[in-house]
Image (cartoon, rainbow, N blue to C red; front, side, top):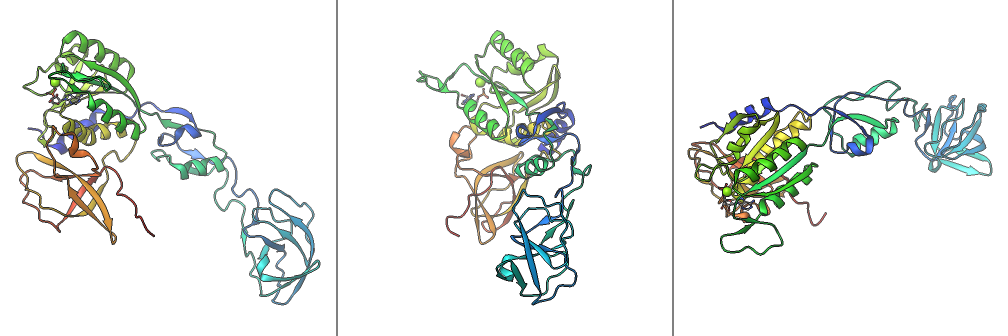
Length: 405
Ligand code: AMP
Ligand code: MG
């Protein structure tokens, strides 16, 4: 059976980033830049004051020297007349220096009396002045393709006057739940029925990843119903995710239906636990992931494959989950014939992370992943692990913060 690393390789080689789009800066949050961005102007646009204080021409001023204050420059004001030697202006942070000025002394470093100030200490040439173009100059490349746009990047581009940028769009993901036993949330399950909880978990997880969700509802285990919904998903989405109906014992209709839509199989069945029956391929060139129906298995295969697929579609150069070193708090049984992925919580104390495996790891249990922030990979044939050992976990969510400073 295919191992996880090999399956990932197939997935990454199959999926290409979506075609870039032009987006207003504010809509680009969380997306990845597809083309370099240049600054439209210099920042700062002019030499300006970094402090509330007094601007003057340095000209060898020493401690004890006096200057005559001839004006006041709040932020936004511009003075065109040049300062003469021995003259200063009161200036606020951000105001452009008047011509002739090259140095600023903070208000708290002068004695002031009427329109005279006396320097308490010798200023250095250029003190407290932000120079024109010190952050960037017009035409400078500010961000390279592949950069993820977070608040810091938005602030930088806004300061540079960039209103629209080329980004990989938010993937649209169609979610289809399959199974005769499923009923929608809000209904009361009858005998043999359960709520379609996978949809809610995956839809929430997709929203966390910034994706648009196209809900396709529940398809009964009947070819006609599946076909219609799969066709809709392939027409409207960048990625189709199904749950259920991929295991052997099941009436495996998902793959059968996909075959009517130019299905190219990437892989079916991977040596992982949970999630062995996971299916991947493309249908009409749209990537499709068939996740197992068991809730913890569908959630795990989402993290192991779907999230990677989404980040690949979104143009991320680093589509795999981040890894974190953590100290194990409980014993873990060694690896078997499949690579195991254990749900667990993550805490931080004294600068170290600790991973506590969840007491429930059954793929059928919805409670296995509640509170989980990481998955611990246990490689095939790995030895038993003891508490206190350092392990590397796949980070799903950052550990909680601290309650006290
Ligand atoms: P399957 O992969 O279709 O064989 O389903 C495996 C198990 O997962 C069965 O016990 C199903 O009842 C359960 N299951 C399948 N789909 C869902 C779903 N959408 N929500 C919750 N449980 C599900
Ligand atoms: Mg089923």
